[in-house]
Length: 321
Image 1: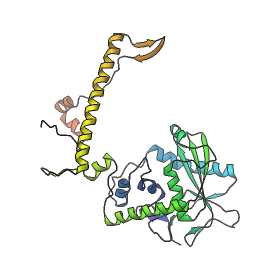
Image 2 (image 1 turned 120 degrees about the vertical axis):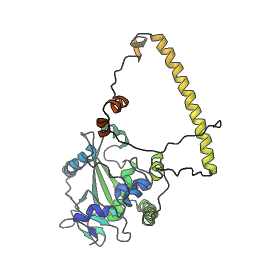
Image 3 (image 1 turned 135 degrees about the vertical axis):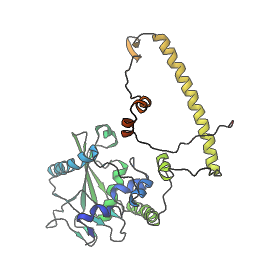
Image 4 (image 1 turned 30 degrees about the vertical axis):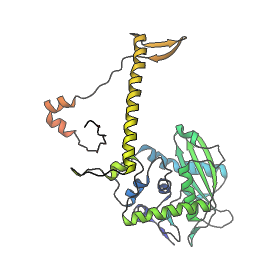
């Protein structure tokens, strides 16, 4: 039985590609990039606080969503407390929320010869109410792309033909979706995952896809080191300079328009048009700590609550420089 259970569970997750990784690897995650996943698998990611409220409530409500699914469908669901490994690709892992018990097979769902003894799995999700629009109508297969990648990954590994995804949106909007296995899509995901896993094993970082990726990959500069720009980089510098000029022009235009409005309002709090308010201009009170004075008058206190961080800042050189 090729499964990992117990204390080695979390450690093993770092040594393979799971359902929460695959969308990021193929560039369909809003939460992570391939480089983020690569750092995690290499054990080089900065450990984040695991007590995030959405993670906590997602874990707590998983059981609630699973029970509601069982209640509405009449199906029996079962936890599978194991990491399921693809029989031919050991890096491909599935950690499913629930298996849906096949009524035609006696007993609980089991993992035999690299396959589950059921044709249906269940994923349980919670979502912010503001994200309701990215979910399709109840009973369809229209789910966000990152979750589509996840369930296709799980079906490809487990051999399930269907994945039901139950979600509680905004704490009160329950919806359920059924997604059918797409072997060709899983094959494509597996190909991308294999290429990525080779980068992990060889210690070769994937190309950065965001500015944050680049900052994390090259956090420091070598003093006095220069580099001959590629054609793409040289063009990017020119384009960025042009964009900055356009932004400066837009800021000047913004200030001109603000001045027209302020001069018209004078000391009024509300600007109206046809009796309807269209703008306000009023006092806002903000409070801040004068860190310079604090360091001067109470340096020992300032030292206790001061932290120092460094980051590389990209600046374009003026042609006058």
